[in-house]
Image (cartoon, rainbow, N blue to C red; front, side):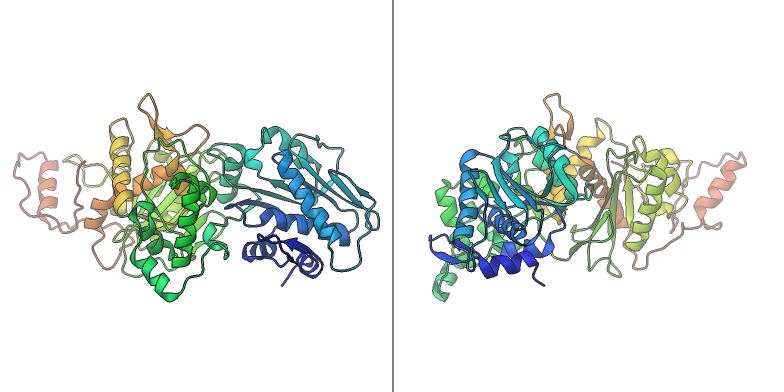
Amino acid sequence: MATKERLIIETLFMIADKQQRDVPFHLNSIQATLDAALTGRDIIPKARQEGVSSYFLGRYLAKCLHERNTRAVVISHEREATQRLLNRVHYMIHNIRGPAPVVQHLSKSEITFPKTNSMFYIGTAGSRKFGRGDTITALHCSEIAYWADPDQLMSGLLQAVTESGEIALESTGNGYQDYYHKFCLRAQSGESRYRLHFFNWQDFQEYTVNLDKDEEEFVLQSLREDLEEPDLVKLYELTAGQIIWRRRKLEELGYDLSKFKKEYPMTLDECFQASGRSLFQIYKLVPEPLWIKDGANLWRLSFHPQPGRCYLLGADVGAGIGQDNSVIEIFDLETLEQVGEYASNRVDPVDFAYKIAELGLIYNTAFITVENNNHGIVTLNELQGHYPIGRLYARPLPVDEEVPSLLNLGFRTTMVTKPFALGKLRALLATQIILHSDSLASELSTFIETDTGRMEAEDGCRDDRVMAAAMAVVGVERAALMLSHEAPYTTPPERDPFCLDYIIKELADRGKDFPITSQVADENSIPIISL
């Protein structure tokens, strides 16, 4: 159902199209999708020239014409851009398809509408300070990633917006770790009340070239590997027309793939350019419509788990006090496709154990690897009483131990073992793993080796998802051995009192000198592979 603003825009307003023709303002595919999905607290990373700013200009003008006491504000990043935005609003007013609206004040930055007692202000970031004394009912911040000091400017702007008012932040990306990037990541991970609306260039129906069938066939048979075209066709099903459009844009950008991805991203991760020092330069992020949000903290691939399939689960444990996330990453063992991701910075280590056990059982009693550093010990202590011990990663056992102790459970990251785990993740990302989580991809892009040799996230970024994924792949070989049974079990296996190993241990416990080694493996014993 169309909103009131859309009905007004498409009934009354005109706009100049890209050929400079006067045409009725009908929302394009991006604008229509956005119009139907706005929540009042929205953030919109996007490709260039998709019409997002034009939509908000039309929306706020419509509000000024039909809602009393509207105080609409649009802030741009530079003076020239502000003037262009203001010119578009003047154009809509002067070319309205109906009675001309009554305008009392039409200046370089402000338009007032006396019949509705409404005001529309368009300005440049920093040119006017907004504070608690101001009242804003609709705020649109355009290209906020390019503002000189967004932290300072936004503090006043946001305080001026009424609780029932709407806020929309929109921009192309301008690098990692800035105000806009961090705002996007918080919205993406569910740590903010803002809803993230990402539009890649493929979503925009105008970004294509019309070709006949012969031309389409020729293009698809002559894909250029140096421009990553075969992968794009395979992963995103780009059409021949979209390939040609992309080639033309690349030509304008000097065939700089990095610049193209920044201006016309295909994934959210491509909106923001990392420092280039990431350990994970190659990975396959595949947008998947069936990658859905299930509750506040869980994302999952909707057609998993499947009966008879085996799964890997890796967990990184946080304190649960609103800082680092506690994360679970889940992969299909056979395909190494990401099938689930859980992240929360408010679950304490004990409760996190129950969440791990719950998801592990849902995913066919998955093989679980938990990082046992710091809070991980607390989680493992609770987890071992609620999950089959044989499905938990453990270090090789001493000869006289049959069941892993708490100190042996989980994977401890040290200066020696951390490079091993991350190296394994890096190799599998480059060759086998298929990702669906933008959040994990973002963390991979900012995970670096520092000048001092430390492997960690860049300043201001996170690595909880990276470490959870590394924990999952650490268990690949052991899981392949242990989870080969068709029917998953839900309780630890009991010892057979008649097996040879059991008899030998009984004799040894009685103080007998019985140095005979086992000749037959217990069918229920757990094979352990050392690093």
